[in-house]
Image 1: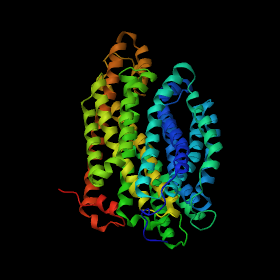
Image 2: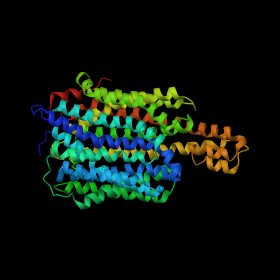
Image 3: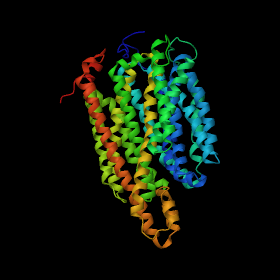
Image 4: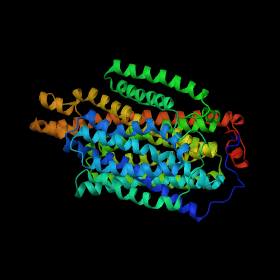
Length: 526
């Protein structure tokens, strides 16, 4: 295997066929992002119609990301072995079929199961698309442009999702939000065999090492479960047991990868600081932005009082700014130092989230400003660190590298919804009793404790105090949102400072095999 993993500046330029193929690869990316953002808007509606509890709502949201994150490593290794195009087509068919199952779920448990299957199918799509991009675009500047377009489509899906979802919920039942995935996947499956090449294969066995697959699952799934339950303060003994299992399995997994001639994960990738910093950045930003977005959707609907369609409209500006930042990042990278762009973007995003600490129950304008700053700040680093990760990866290991990056992102999303969602709920329930009027009935108090979305039902049980009960619930939730906003902002600022230290002060330890990469990793001035 070559030690020079940076794309060759003398490699052939991508032709029209490769750029059209990139358009095909954006279809599954677009769909997955729409699927996530649609659910944020649809959750209150489907929860009422299915009778989902607050715990079931969290599982509906995050079971998809948990399983997707747990299987990405396996699917990335499989893509390197059997070919990324083949795995992409299989995953597309499975994702479309499972979307139908989710749309017609009759119970919360059935929807949770369908979302789990969507996670399994989604795990085949993400590493396959990125591995194909690494193969199709071999020149550094073109790969950077392709990655920015790929990420921009993901952001575009986040923009379109709330609008499409809000419009569908205004006219149809909640399940229609899942059916939009069927025609998208059908189109991809029809055109991909004609337009997409297959990626280089690692030359190992047709299937990944079975023990490594099991160990990776035993590392990720019990670990995520344990963190989730500890964050909620529930099933503590089981949660600790899950973390112990994850720690032991993870240790054995790493040792096994070092011994195997054809490992599921090539640990040599972690020797490049660009790779490790990129993974850490994806993880932290995933946790923060997913958790804040989850809380934001509840704030806009249950506190400010917007309809699903109005929520979608108010989310458009921040998503458009994120889309613009993603598309502009390759041009900015030609003029400015990469490390400065990464650090500066994270600082802007963190500052925006700190503004959430100033929100009141009707601070719609301030909320918009805060989220625009956060979204715009995050957009530039995401494209640049993905480009650094893929530029540090051999083409035959692109599936594995992409799966690790996406695992960090998806794991961050899952943990963000679980931990930040739980923190908001904990603050809400801690403050609510002191804010409710003294004459509220026991039934009103218990109902209101379920969540701010249950405040109208709680008010109906004490009609004479209805307005005070609703306001108390909205104020308690807003206080919880203030807390997570400030903590999220501090987390992004801390990540920026850490990235500056590792990539800036210790840049000499990072491989610099092309002039562009050498420029990117020049030390950042204090």
